[in-house]
Length: 278
Image (tube, rainbow, N blue to C red; front, side, top):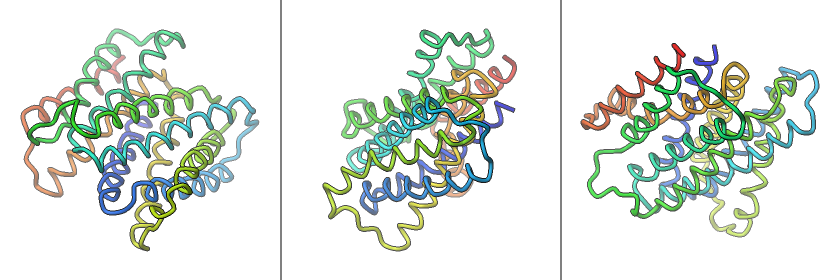
């Protein structure tokens, strides 16, 4: 069950990040990020009330809030990076950093001990994330514009994943609510400082809200996944989200895959199987 929840989180994140990246090139990335978090907050409150928790402790809410700070800052940096650099650099750098750091923390600090097959899956997944999310565009490199934003975004994604995994199961989904509130508040000062960037046309606002809802769904599924398996494996599986836009590009847009992307898809599939076996 944990495997399916984490993969569901990955699918929702893949859709949200792809749509958010496209929308942030047409509208203010600050407005897109803020609207998405506000919509995510509203959705999370409704769902949390529908699924009441036994006893959300203050510590669980604090972990959720810390995770939300990571979410808010990660989205701002990711969208800003996409406006400055190419998706072929920004997305894979942020994804690999966001996946790798929680694994290090999980093993070195939290005492996670994945099985041998799961370790093999983790080691296959990290290069798979990089290869799959690299578009076939010339001149992409780690020093390209937007790479610094991508590195920082990945670090805050890692904070989001690691902190949220510390919330106890008894808290239900209230850590997500605390996270969406903290994410909104972390973006709000920047948004108010740059009020001229807060305008969103009606259609763009609806799209941003839908993106925020998808991202919140991804966090719901990830939180449940961490309660069913090690954080280390839940993070890696959830971080396979770059696979989603690649597959959509092939199926919907009739795009052709590069050799590296084919290798990455194969490695991602092998990683899922190995983690499932482990």
